[in-house]
Amino acid sequence: MNIANWLVKTASLHPDRPALFNGATCYANYAEFATRAASIGAYLRNQLQIKTGDRVAVFMPNCTAYLEVLYGIWFAGAVAVPINAKLHSKESAWIIKNAQADVVFTTIKYAAALPVRHAITIDDDTYISLYKTAPLAQPIPVKPNDLAWLFYTSGTTGKPKGVMITTANIMAMVKAYFVDVDQVSADDAAFYAAPMSHGAGLYNFMYVLRAARHIVPPSGGFDSDEILTLATILQNISFFAAPTMVRRLVERAKARNLTGEGIKTIIYGGGPMYLADIIEAIKVMGPRFVQIFGQGECPMAITALSRNHIANCSHPKWKHRLASVGVAQSVVSVQIRDTMGKKLPANKIGEICVSGLPVMKGYWMNETATKDTLKDGWLHTGDMGAMDEDGFVTLHDRTKDVIISGGSNIYPREVEEVLLQHPNVSEVSVIGKKDAEWGEVVVAFVVATNIDTAKLDAFCLDNIARFKRPKHYYFVPKLPKNNYGKVLKTKLREELSNL
Image (tube, rainbow, N blue to C red; front, side, top):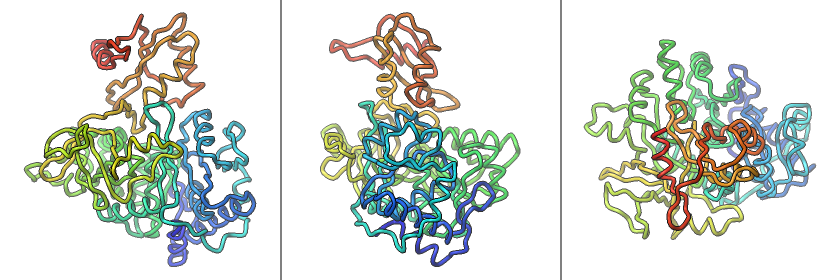
């Protein structure tokens, strides 16, 4: 079944219900939403000859058109390839080429730089003209194991990997959301404060199924004052927020003497939430919080810490549970395993492994990475943790050196490879540094000659997204290494703590 049928069904049953909003302004009801998606699908299918299973890229900021485009792609039986709008055009071009996408929805700013047969720009009359295309009568049929979403996540090799998410994966994720995370009614609203190219965009399905509202803030992103103000107007809004976003929102609520009126649910994840921060958040804003632990390879559906678990401060294990990422969601099994793949007993630290219906099909055109990650039917997440006797999982460390800054994953190797392209740089090692505002920031230790911070910063901005560039550069005569020539990042972290 094509997931665009969910939109068709809702539009048939509730055509007049308001659907797409920019702030407090409604731009489309469900009948209009579905018709526009069907017209976009027809244009892709008939004018651009997009076939079932073809990839169509989406490289654009949060906007109401984002959902129209996604459902248009699915109407056509194609695969959506959402790309983080914060990426550099060179990075997005690599993803588009790897995905073998011939069509991209983007903005005028980037259209000329992208290697595609057709670039459809959303910020001029080109996009609006698609509405005039005679709509498809029904979504093109697809099979449960067909791809629907190709999500690119950075890898330790420095190049992004395409996570293949099928229709069946999404269906399982949606089921788990309703059972384990939160309920949604027609009076609710999904508020897209985080990038729709990533986890935030996946929330749309539950709200489409319930004929609820979809709200893109005028800022297009996360602004604490904007959220607090719009929530009082729109009511019953729910949204995903990284821990750093939650902290900023709580600080503004306190400063404005607000308690989060109009906010139904804040789902946090994407990085470590400090115990003191979530306790303060509950104190200021009450029982509005739910935590999920997932990753691109098993979107939103590994564990969940429910609203009741978070708010039940009278429970003797409350703080312990509050510091965890919750229990396995209903559509997966979760185990903690040692390096030999053996299941560990309670409270022993090992790798978090997950098996179940939401687990990805594999990595796009990357059999080696797929075999390394999917073993004997289990996804090896690369995250270290422990599970207590009650099934609550607590994260302890990551097997990968990923840096989580403001909820975005940044992989050191990716930044290192860019810096090493500069002719004056001979060696570099990138690590994360704890930061009160962002959780972590990127730090680079550089061995170089005749170069300064400003020039390196400019070089990074020419080649990678702004949020990935190092916030601090430390020029050193050499990097600490072991007998095999491997850079000792543990030594660098020690040095950093003394700087």
